[in-house]
Each structure stands twice: as structure tokens, then as C-alpha cells.
Length: 364
Ligand SMILES: C=C(O[C@@H]1C=C(C(=O)O)C=C[C@H]1O)C(=O)O
Image (cartoon, rainbow, N blue to C red; front, side, top):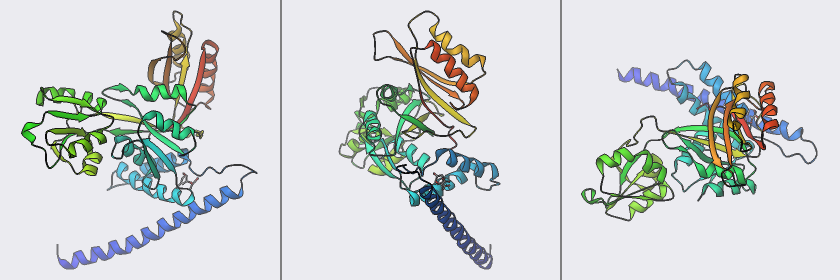
């Protein structure tokens, strides 16, 4: 390609960038207007709600439906995710607590869902994320809830039994683990591998094959594992890209998770009810009396009404030995008439029923 052609193309890009810049600024001014209108129509004592997850899900879906390439749908939606995040921050910067420390997959999930224009706060434990939200110190919390290889994150399910929370969103993240070492690590003398118990479990077969005699040490997070390796010469960590970058570690082996589709689902928790988008999910907790056929009774109304169950999980209840609660996710919104009917039917049979929230299905 000649210099001349390149020069002409760069001029075209400059002109387009100017238009893109103008349009983004116009969009941001519109968001500011939205904030003004919302403030003006508040009733006495009413708190304004700036963040609208259902609206954001619709915007992203529309972008993906209309996108003609050459950028892929996900790539395009990711760009719009960040534009919306910045526009919302003009109205009100969101405060988000997540299971930390910095560099965890939960932080990556928070950024994927809310974009980067948020004030994020790492917490040391799942329960602390719940407490931070309950105390009103942040608008939302982000916690892991299930992994496709290892199953439920029990700390999260149990925390829902203790706190009154509304689930207002979900996000799924592909989880790639690497074996990481520091610049001082003697790679032929590794005698210890640190990681979170979930990650060690997700790489069990790989570890059995490559490091069968090395001690596996479970620590509080993958980021904590990466941090420890930095100061030691005979250890390695299993963690993801964010932790590797944060602690300046190098990858001795990449993508060592046993299953290539290894993914984790995260929930956004807060106090805000989310209106229907037409493509939603609902999470409930139900406890049934301990009698034969109780689980069957619970599931029949879903089947009879053609409602798609996406998950069912059992946990010991806090109220008695050998009694259980069921965590159920299904497709639909609790305001849909069909879903309403099912929930009414179940509550007639159940000891207790709590709707944890209805929220848009993950778009990204
Ligand atoms: C602009 C609004 O407020 C926020 C910003 C949005 C955006 O930038 O598109 C969308 C929803 C809200 O989180 C709105 O309510 O429409």
C-alpha cells in the first residue's frame, strides 16, 4: 500500500473520530438531561434512581441486534457498555463492593457488568460484600454463585439466608487459570502451589498430571496466591490474567483448567427491584415441610405452566437439623401473570417462600 493511500485513510479515520467524539458527547449530554428530568419529577422525600439495569440490558441487546460488523457483537456491546458506564457516572457514580482483593475474577465480573466508570471496593469475604450492601455503604455488591466445573458457591447461597437482598443482575465469565511464577522462582524446584480451593479443584487433573507431588495450599483468593508467590522462590500460584498483571508474574503454563468451557456465574446484589425486560430470570428460596413428595409438589407447578427451570440447589436450612431450603432459578419475571400464578401455588404448600429478585438475563 502506498504512503499516499495510508495518509488518505488516516485522514478519514481522524474525521470519523471527530464525529464519534461529537456523538458520544451528545449522548452524554442526553444522559445528563435524563438525570435532570428524573430529579424534577421526584415526589417529596423520594430518592432518585439513576441506574436502570433493565434499560441497559435493552440498549446492549439492540446494539447486538443491529450490529453489521466487522466488529463482533460482543466486542461492540463491550464498547457500548463502557460508554453507558461513563454516561451513568455523570448522573451518579455507582459504588460497587466485590469479593476482593484486587485482581479477583469477581472484580473482572464487576467490570464486565457495570463497566469501568464505577467506584469499586474490594471486600475480604463474601459475607462482607453482603454486609456492605445491607449497610448502604455501596449501591451494589458482586459475588460468585456457581461454577460450571465445581458447582455452587455455598458461602453465597448461605448469605442469602441471612440478609435481605435483591438480585438485580447476573454475569457469566469464562475462567482461564494459569500457573504463575515470579522473577525469583526457581521453576525446577517448585514445592508449593497456592490458589483458592475452587481454582485448585478446577485444575485438579492438570495438577495430578504435571505436579503430582507438590503441596497444594488453599488460600483466601487467587489474588492472595499471586501476592504470596512474589516473595517466595519455591512456589507458584494458580490465578487469572488480572492477578498475573497486578503482581507482575509470568505464565509458566496457560489455560490449565481441566474443562475448556470453565465458567463462573456472578450475581449483582442490591436493594433495587428491576422491572421486566421480556427476557428475564427469577431466583427464589423455598423451604418445604419435611414430608414425602415435597420436592415433587414444589416442581409440578413449574412443569404444568411450561416454566423453564435453569437451576435448583439444596442447602441445609438454619432452622433445624436435616431440614433443607431450595434455591431455584427459572426463566421469567415475578410480575409475569404466569409466574405470579406459579409462585402463589407454591406458597400455599411451602413453609416459606422468598423471591430474591427478577433480573435481565446476562447479555454479555
Ligand atoms: C440514561 C439513563 O440512565 C442510565 C444510563 C443509561 C445509558 O447511558 O444509556 C441507561 C440507563 C441508566 O443506567 C436512563 O435511565 O435512560
